[in-house]
Amino acid sequence: MPDEKPLKSSFELAMERLKKEDADAGVAVRPLTDQQKAAIGEIRNFYEAKLAEQQVLHQSTLRKMTDLAARDALEAEYRRERERLSAERDSKIEKIRRA
Image (tube, rainbow, N blue to C red; front, side, top):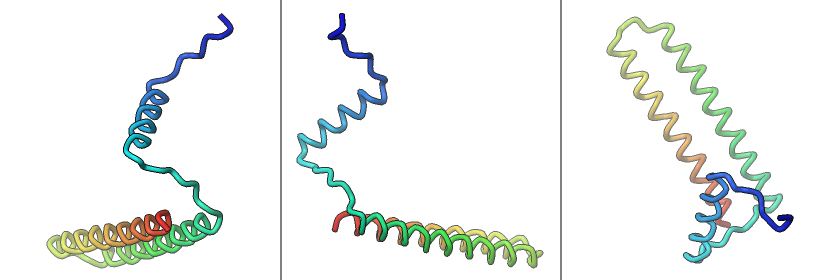
């Protein structure tokens, strides 16, 4: 019985299956270089700061508003700006990963 392997969790089995599918499809996994990790870290820090700045400005503007329609419009604009910044961040990170 010493040759028996320990049971695997469903997560481990799923990850093995996905790795096999990637290998069959020709998808290669390359580890990131230190330079890529540093660049990704800088991008994340920059966009985290931008998002925090947007949140502070948004909260400040909301406190001054009384009109509900204007508040709703401001909320929608804030959500769009957050989505734009997040998409821009993710795009830059993906570009670095592919380089």
